[in-house]
Length: 588
Ligand SMILES: [Zn+2]
Ligand SMILES: [Zn+2]
Image (tube, rainbow, N blue to C red; front, side, top):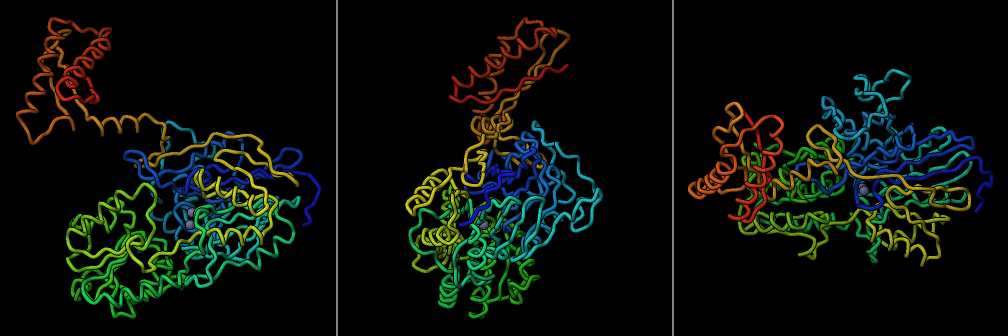
């Protein structure tokens, strides 16, 4: 291994997110010259899968970029999964750097930006405004923008090498469950080399795209790699990863053997290989295909435009209704039973479901269930089983109906030995994955570095060390706002959802108390009018007693408000044992 010994600069790696959760991937690479001048790139910009009450998705808190005084010069995206690209449309305003990605990722990003072009996600309670407000022209995809900025979305291909200031980056083909996934071979001007795997697996029959390019990785690695920033998702799996080719064969058999009823398959929208397998299985069994779900339709459109799939057997809802059930396959979003997804609508028989599942239909869950979604998936399954629908999922079937897109231990070992890094740095991990991955690397005789969210890891030629920490966190996308997850909005929403809300309006006649208006939301059962009325009257009686004869001037309003809140809480708690939020208004 020959690693240059000059130390004109150092490379710092900061995981802003993605090292303590599976999701929300975002890593900053900063090269600092001896004089202190820094150049930074951002790798991936994903959303998280957990949620706050009422919020749509989570994105990484990027305030650390400002705190460290960094300017992001380029955003490099490894692949088109939501946990790697999903946050971009929400925070691009605040990053304003050109994006570099492979064709499928660019195609999906352009659709995302186009879809969201009229929405500006404003911050509330957090300051992300280190970069000037976006110029409208900058929002036009692919168009040259003022101030000598580069195009917003720039296409690169596997094998391409590009220079970004002191960084040289090579994109390397890898297999994953979405087309055009890439690993990154990163080299700094003073010869520090890093392999950033993104999400990958070793599959000789990936169906979409080509197998992982170990040859190019080996060539880069010959020069000596300091750090392997590595996917940890399946570090606990000891067996070889299942090939997508096997899933295709299983699906073909399943569809062929299903002689009656509609055949429905749900998978992640971006799993183009699975969609391709489903389309092939449908074609062979003489079924036409109805696609349900906006995100799925978007992915299929991009995949077709790039020649990855043939969707000629896709039909619309009207055509599907005219066909016999055994002539129809449905590919649907909703494998995680997300509320409002097409599968969820079909399970709940909502009007806009697009199709109805009937007794005798078959539904295949061709996806793993993300942690935290098991309960919701079970609810949908039980609803459908009650209606006589046959459900096949990975944990009740011997058929191979899902293959993970991530490397298991044999793949991880193969890559570590091939790249032969000075340090293995696990990411795409919860703590348990990270700790296991570190132990696994050590067992193979390699050193490993514990990179947590916010750790500033500094690589200087022969070592990698912790050079500090920076605050990280999550921001919730709530309607058109970006709000810190620590905002009291979410505390109050949770309280209201758990305990309900009571509103007291006190009419004032000058400084004396007039009549009271009392209403509740989610405290008393509206279907039991008498009980509700009795309870509200009990509150009214207690407040009348409390306020009787009281004169309320401006100075006393707050004190009176507190007394009202305490009194109402007392009455409600005594009668039903709940502790609702109480609002008090004074009006003339
Ligand atoms: Zn992925
Ligand atoms: Zn991922």
